[in-house]
Amino acid sequence: MQTKEQTVSAYAQQIIGQIRRVVVGKDQVLLWVLAAILAKGHILLEDIPGVGKTTMALSFSKVLGLDCSRVQFTPDVLPSDVTGYSVLQQNTGKMIYQPGAVLCNLFLADELNRATSRTQSALLEAMEEGQVTVDGVSHSIPKPFIVMATQNPTGAAGTQLLPDSQMDRFTVRLSMGYPSAKDEIAMVMNRQNGNPLEQLSPIMNRETLLAIQDIVAGTYVKESVVKYIVALIGATRNHRDILRGASPRATLSVMSMAKAIAQLQGRDYVTPADVQAVFINTVAHRLILTPAAEAQDVKSELVLQDIISAVKAPTVG
Image (cartoon, rainbow, N blue to C red):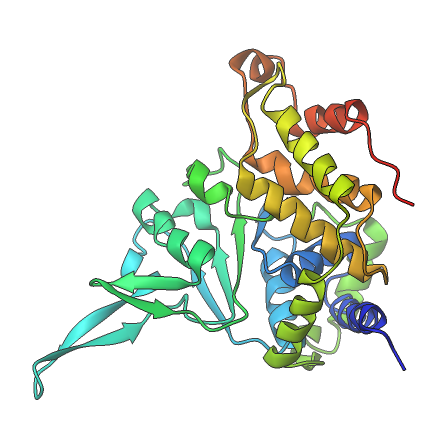
């Protein structure tokens, strides 16, 4: 009989095994996305167009059996397109709510940083509280709920920075990058007989995913490991190169991601190594560096690596 941890790990292997038929050579990115989903988090994919961000999101929705909705963000997309709106029913005189695109399990926000600030902000309540409020009435979003947003690198045509408050709501920020020549050849060959995305089939339903998310949430974390996470986050608030450090929300995200990574490795407890593994991808996008650091082209990832090296990890026996 499989333990809960073995069940999580076995499902993960099946999920990654299916999706790698569509997204070739990006197993590490797939693992991070899956970990964020199991941690009940949201994912920001930052990369140039055309490397497979949208394809990967659609693949996860199919394999996990999730109701997926997609919005291609442009400057003329309105907040009501995302959250929904109320219309007057003439025969009763009542306002009837028309659900927006965000009322789904997996919301794919394609090129989110091409939308106006007002439309970008329409996602804030949904990402944090799992609901939207329209005309003073709150509407719950079905569970599980994951936002997978893509954005082009800052400076690309028609883009603008996401608000800091929204960046902080993404559990991780990932980049896929160009495929190797070998993987690109495999990608082309896989499409000789049609789009492999159409051949994917669900290996679980929403109820199963919710159960697995609960298993992940129940992963044991020793107090010394909690103190280690708090010390790492605290170091971002006192570093010479960081103008604004990570928030308490980042602390919770590091905890959740470390639990997910532990479960994916077949363990029901978190180690300092799990924390170190998730720290950079979970925190880097939340930081604001000092003008001096930016002028010297200092990268958030390198600053966080220095923090990991400087903060002593506990011994977990």
